[in-house]
Image (tube, rainbow, N blue to C red; front, side, top):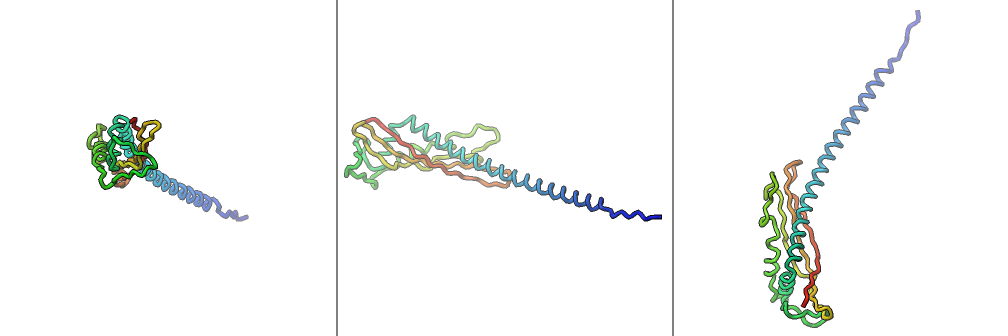
Length: 185
């Protein structure tokens, strides 16, 4: 009688296959977990960024609705008279110490969420906030040929979003926008 010698390769082959599948499944679960956290982080960034953009858009709307008041407040903040031209290249220097930034502060102070509460179900004023934090005049001059006062101004806005999912705190995003204002003299 001959002995049937089988080496038993099936058991190690099945165990190797099961280990490979388990490693693949563990890697897939880990990737899914990291991907979910990254998606939450991106969502949180986008919420804060869009809130900051909302504040900038509100300021741009106000600038387009009240260009005369914005130009006058900007020129006053430089310490110049809004009724007098600012000639580019002249030796007329603005008295910045005599400038009054209160007009600009009053101009942008209502561009925030405290003046316009959220009407979205489930969202409170402490979850999403935006505000214009600064509005300043960078330069101003009068173009005598076109009889226009030209002002370069910069607005700074902040958006804040709070997300409780994913153990995230409040995220703040800042946005700066430079605009050109013109006023006919």
